[in-house]
Length: 289
Image (tube, rainbow, N blue to C red; front, side, top):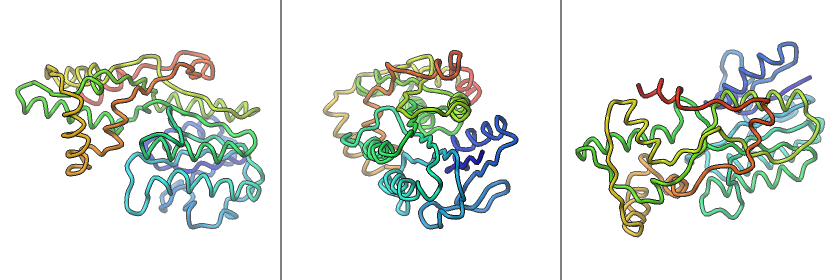
């Protein structure tokens, strides 16, 4: 069996690649990256000839981004890549496709991240037997959300332990899944690839953002007290000023996403794994302790 993995060098992609290699040692694994690196096949899906991939049995797409760049806007990274996959589907031999999307993906969503994810899903679901995995926050040590929440802890320390946040952000629920569990899910789906579908994937626990900030503060041996911020004031100061003046700190997409629950009522993680997915708490403790 020939398995091609797009996005093998990313935080999530590297975990998925290692898990696939461990679970399929006798199969032909083509782990792709845009740069030349040991153990990787150099392949840029936007510029290179897809004929170089040969005939493919399973294509795993882990390429994605939350923060657009000048050379890689979200429209290109998500929608453009989906179009490339569809365009080259028959050339690859009509492979099974496992595509990593996100909970809440919707072509009409207000954020660029979830709208482009949704448009990409729409394109790929027109192909036969495509599996779309929509995870909640994927835990890796360098996850952007953990960095932003840790930064809020630091902001609170500068303001004598008090943190001014809107209630919508403080109460926003996240249901993070360990990258290792997501990778195991991908491996199990490859092993028994028999049908397509859209599957939401999340961890066993739902946490309000406020609780996650408190936990990160506790791991850092800090204390945070919250002060409710008026929603309209927050939308003006954070949504319109901070996101424009300090986009590296928090862009508008991230602000809007952190005001919307990212949880699953149709979580398929346990059913696919055959066990409960792991908690992120021990992993967070290792990062911030």
